[in-house]
Image (cartoon, rainbow, N blue to C red; front, top):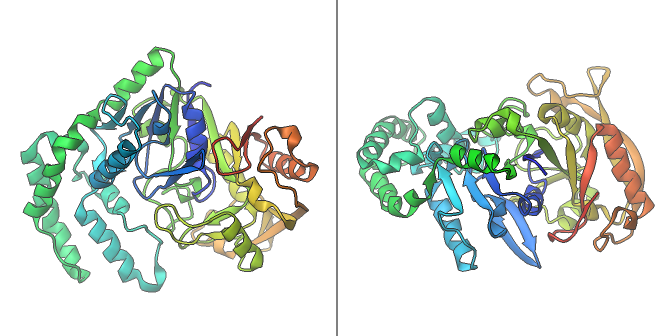
Length: 424
């Protein structure tokens, strides 16, 4: 399989967890390279559902080394809660197979308070943050005042950094009419977790290099989606990290030459959570049908997702940004019983036809989608196990996506379970 990067090709929620779970069974190691617990990766095996926010989705495959890279911002409480939940199911979550980079930055209570305070202040102009403290933690990282996981080995350093941080954060919190936080309390709470958390600290880059030297395959797990990227997404309605495939190198400590295969996860229609432009959004019965049939509610927040037709313009940009070598098409079964299927093949913008995204801020909210119609299907495809099992109308839809994007669709998901996946 070689080293493989898994990224979301839309606005997140594409079904990455399932594909990561499948491919991690063939990998020696899997590593998360960006984001935090604003991600929610859902895996369904034999009818049992597991939702992971921080721990790599390969943890359900025995023997796979699971690592959290330096590009991730980690909430210690959430990490340990996930460890406890997985352990209660009999899953091995020992430090022998699960590790955290010492360079990963920690999300602290003041990050969450600031995140929520700012979003509340925006009133009618909300960005759509999950309120998990992701953005403020990345801010501290960029400002070079962040607290890293490795700092937990030095209690005096932890006290100093938290005390220094709260001198500024409490001024901001008071300005937002939020309660200030006590430095001693925050410090004691974090240091109380240190004995349980520090055994998981490791040199992620060294362990990955060792796997590579031994000829083992590595799977790089991204979170969110390409169009939530801080640089290349629909700014300012984006996340606070680089979600594109190139960040798999920076977020783990391995060089770009280690990235051999880039698999983009594409939902057979389009969804988005929270605010931001969405050219193909359906505010009608079809949109409601997709939301209900696809169970489109956020794994992290429970928020209903906005739904719309597949957008090939957005995906064309994802192919370019990430250098996709393969596509995994998910939730194809959700389109069952729709009389016709639409694909946005271009935009009309300022009197001209565009095959790629206009780059000015806010421009995507002003485009008009140009649609191509294909026949729908009524057949239940959830039991199909091979490409040839799929009805002709379904194959036509899949092949048209390949033509529009010029990328091979290597995986087709026809249901939520791990087994309901066709590999071509």
